[in-house]
Structure formats: C-alpha cells, structure tokens
Length: 179
Image 1 (tube, one colour):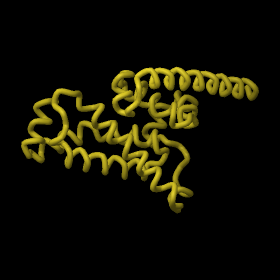
Image 2 (cartoon, helix red, strand yellow):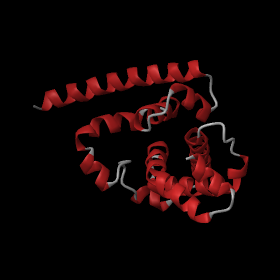
Image 3 (tube, rainbow, N blue to C red):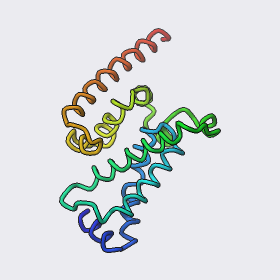
Image 4 (spheres, helix red, strand yellow):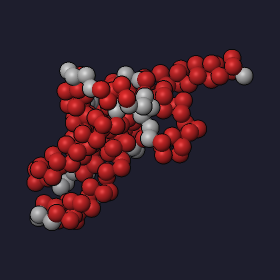
C-alpha cells in the first residue's frame, strides 16, 4: 500500500485507478449502509475519491491509509445526507427500501433480519457497527475515523450490539407466532 500511495503522490494516475479498484466495492457498500440509498451512496463515494485524489499529498504516510479513506467517506455520507434532507427527490419514492442490491440480497439472504435490524439502528450506533463488523476496523481506527474518544466508540458498539440483540429476539418471536 505504501508503494501505491507513493506512486499516486508522484503523479501516476494508473496507480490511483488501482487504488480506486481496490476500494470501490467496499466503500459503496459502507456508503449504502450509512445513507440507506444507493444514489446518495454513489455520490458520496464519488466525492470521497475526488477528495482522496485532491488531498493525497497531505496524507501522512506514517499512518494507515484505510482509516483516512473511511473518515473521508463517512464525512461525505453525512454531507450528502445533510444536503439531501433539504430536498425531496422523486427517486426516494422509487428506490427499493432495502439497502442491499439484488446480488447482496441473494448472497446474504440468511442475514436479512440482521441487516434490517442494523438499518433500523440510529446513526450513533449503526455507523460504528458497520465499520467494526462489516468492514473490520478496530475500535481505535473507528475512533480515528469518527473523530471520537475510543471509550465513546466502545460504548456505542456495546449499546448497538444490545439493541441488535433485542431486535433479533423480537424478529424471532414474530416468526414463531406465524409458524
């Protein structure tokens, strides 16, 4: 990764394409999970990579790249959501309510209740849960990405897991009533 970043800083555009190809799928999935809207997510990811390209010179090589990238992504998702909350788009009414694409729905069909529960969490708990369990960041990296104290992140993860557990129990109870 260090060589790739160095090449990008040196002006090699093909290296930036390699970086984009390496992270595009992951960033779009995280952005969809945060924004709950594929069009907003696409906008956020596009802006994220534009910002990465424009600001790569200021990236501190002594630090890991992924937390820096995902901090930009989370900020862009929040910016897009804030901007979109001021407008009503017809695509909001036409968009499928699921945050998963058809491919993801097929691949993760058995986790449908869990994804629904994650989608229903407040951003306060949902974003750290996504970064930790769907993307694999450590609590320290999440704290860096969200610019929070690591104990705050741990607390939000704990409370998010508790809320998910309770939601999953309700889903199971609901299914048992219909069996």
